[in-house]
Amino acid sequence: MRVFSGIRASGDKTLGNYSGGFRQYVRTQEEALAASGEAVFCVVDMHSITTPFEPEVLREATLSVFAWLLATGLDPDRSIVFVQSHVPAHSEGAWLLGSVTAMGELRRMTQFKDRAEEQDFVSAGLFNYPVLMAADILLYDTDVVPVGDDQRQHVELTRDLAERFNQRFGETLVVPRGVYPDEGARVKNLQEPERLMSTTRGAPAGVVRLIDEPDVIRKKFKTAVTDSGREVKHDPEEKAGVSNLIEIMAVSTGASIAEIESRYDAQGYGQFKEDVGEAVVALIEPFRRRYNELRADDAELAATMRRGADKAAEISNVTLARMYERMGFVRA
Ligand code: TYM
Image 1: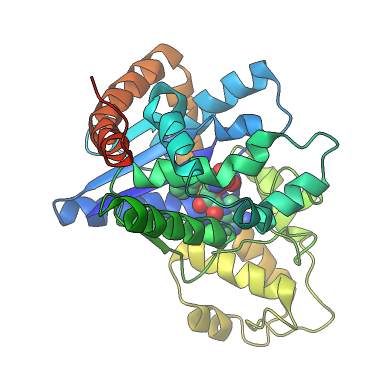
Image 2: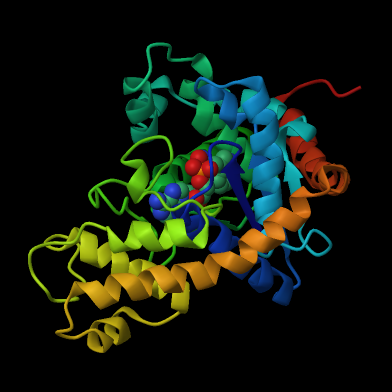
């Protein structure tokens, strides 16, 4: 069993990234190792240049996100943790996969449409984003891709590209499957519960960042938008705000949605919101402490990146060579 996932080097990472990303990475790392498999995780810095960016910000974000991967529980001695641009096979693989990707498929990607709408300058890189993501995944003969719900369409495209490549050139690539969390696959902005929680859009007061101080987090939950009722009930259609808070509570404590509903039955929202805030603080505080420790030694982080890249290259170069071979490139 091989697990692979990636996370962009951008912005401050949020509770949403924890729920759909970090949390699942750690779980699947343990599952893969228990099954004598391998877990591979990557800071996708090359994806970060597909929307407007600043070089200094990219440099800092790459170190930061790498540190968050370790701080939330990935073990670089047991898993492979690396930075995408350190392994050239990713950009080569993306170029090869471009030959089995239709423009129409890329045009249909909702993330492309959303991001393109927000920008004056829409780069070719943004259009090709999903092809690079497919290369990331397919180069590791990946079986399982843990992601949040917003990446579902990209993972489905990856499957289609693998199948198409295999049909055209013979059995070469493993067709992966996405795994999505039962709860918290789409954590919403606390102020605008119809929107995904993200640092790039939506009210900042509704975005919980992993680096936020405890008091900041408490305040964000106290002022979270709910509704005019008083029932703590999971009903995403009618009660988007409350349902989001219930899912966050489930993610933070491991309690089930039914347990949370019955615990807060007819208590109103005040205490509930406060308790969710405390649960999130208790969850995040140890990560934040570990993050700060790791960031005190960026040279050590860079050495860990290097070791991860060497291990990643060993695997991906084999798949890449197989792709070149099957496609008829002369290998000398
Ligand atoms: P990125 O960097 O936007 O997000 C990293 C992970 O966090 C999840 N996520 C969320 N989950 C629940 N609720 C939210 N509000 C929320 N916001 C983000 C994402 O689903 C993701 O799992 N395209 C990918 C990066 C990527 C990748 C890959 C992923 C590149 N190559 C290969 C897997 C495999 C992305 O932009 O993630």
